[in-house]
Length: 181
Image (tube, rainbow, N blue to C red; front, side, top):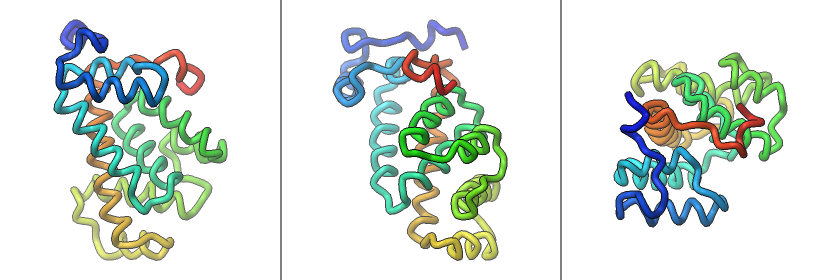
């Protein structure tokens, strides 16, 4: 897809329906990420992703488990921007370097409970949600709940949307994330 199909919108150039979300992201982050500027070409996608990701952030999954899910989707979908962004988030959460390296490499995690989130996320994707009883029971036996299992579906949906859109628009890595690329 030619880059010109997805311009780097500013608050002034973006479709009117995207501007409130862009302003909110700018206020929260102190800058407008390039990916947000490109996703603004579709206010529906931008607004939808921001709403769904906020819902995912409010789930009962703990923050580290959520980030494991996000990185699993990001690496599976080869979203270089998402990998950099969520490496930064994992670092801010104090995640162990071995866990971050394993997630970035698509390898098993040294933490058994977090590895179960990674395995379960991949199983849900592979089975289009129809995981077998053994897979679900394994997830539950690691201290997760049936509510958490459904929250995994929410996370997969949100971050599949994001990773595919960021890849389509060839969203660049902002300078603030370069150290995590």
